[in-house]
Length: 403
Ligand SMILES: Cc1cc2nc3c(=O)[nH]c(=O)nc-3n(C[C@H](O)[C@H](O)[C@H](O)COP(=O)(O)OP(=O)(O)OC[C@H]3O[C@@H](n4cnc5c(N)ncnc54)[C@H](O)[C@@H]3O)c2cc1C
Image (cartoon, rainbow, N blue to C red):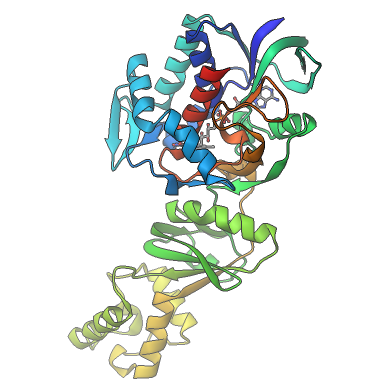
């Protein structure tokens, strides 16, 4: 019989394994991919943004945010940086986002695996866990290879995002069958889809915006940053950041619209003054020419079409009511959203094991003794910027140190 089995050798499972092994525990990781930490390799565009110097609780979402706070307190971003320095990861920060100085995500994966092996953690790859049962004294773990038994168990299977990197949602089924409530998993940090016709016209255009999410016409979230129009919808960091609110609303069949401010640094009146002064300086330009140097030309044609104005009209012929119409479109450019991209393009899972059933001092289940959870399998998700990996490190540390 094994002492501790960890199902899933991702970020949180490796952290839990190292911390438990450093305390003298005997640990076995069962990982269904051919190597541990595959998802880490894809993080931060291959550079691994492993934490953030501005680690604020507002960057996390969960049905129980106090649960998240309590866990993060036990292993902060500063402790994560120290932990990785000890393993050899010299940190580099860009606007608070922390990366390995090597700028290689493989560095983070490699040092975790090296440390785990050095501590005597047994790592079994190409082993998929299909079923877990518990009798009074131990767990029985049925896998694609053989049956294992263990005294204690950590479920660190991740969520459903990016299945090709290992997490296929099977952890939710394992937890559910052990009696846990699963808050419906939905794609997070994901692009949004729209069937609005104008998108074909502006495919590929990138522009700095503020984007508001309106659910049944109520404002639920806002972000600023560079948005990209695509032929299927919208993408870019601000879109990923707001996507979890859209996922939740669409799942409840609510109406979702984005209101995009294409000149977010100017208020409405400044925007009006700006356009009027451009007309005054270059009255000889057509409406299409008036916007050269301000917006991408594809976007200009789209704005003029929405305002029902000819691109060839001389700009000094624009009357006040049409000018107001144009400014309103620039400041409030609507996009109807009807879906998100699927899980295989999402960076994170929204939803998961209800944290009400988990002890925030230990990560142990309140339903099944000696069973622990770490990482994305829980109902916790973070924004872009190292928050999701910090959650993996903090929850993995806490489970590994208390098991
Ligand atoms: C493209 C991409 C980029 C990202 N970039 C960042 C970033 O820069 N910064 C950041 O903070 N976060 C980032 N994330 C999110 C972050 O990677 C995850 O939140 C984090 O890896 C979750 O850790 P985890 O241990 O919970 O799960 P995972 O890392 O997903 O590990 C789960 C492991 O369990 C294994 N497993 C699952 N089911 C079974 C089973 N039944 N039997 C055996 N093994 C199983 C899987 O193969 C996997 O190895 C990114 C995610 C993606 C997809």
